[in-house]
Image 1 (tube, rainbow, N blue to C red):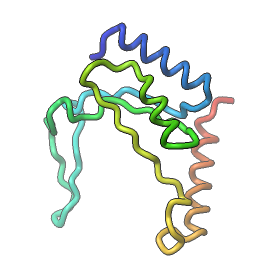
Image 2 (spheres, rainbow, N blue to C red):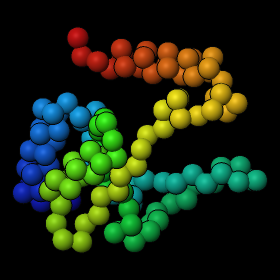
Image 3 (cartoon, helix red, strand yellow):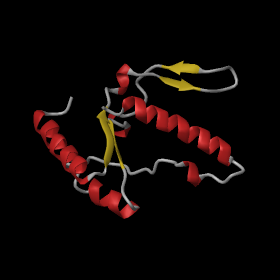
Length: 126
């Protein structure tokens, strides 16, 4: 469990990102000991119970931000309220435009976008 000081610092950082208009989502995650992994193979899906890895190798939360460049994402990540030895990994979310038409045909991309738009409409406060 994070300290009260870290929670307060994270709240301040989240507020800065929200005010800047870059934060789309961000959540902390419960420990992997409360989760499960599903491994897919020839015999069908197999449930793997924790523990999975060393605690310093596990994802404990995430932010989804929308910025114009990798450099801008790095700039925000460098401001995260983390201490010595903590790691923050930056990953880009795939968009339909990242896939060539032979992998994701335009009609399938449009169908996926319509589903995303419908989901957004259901979760956007009115």
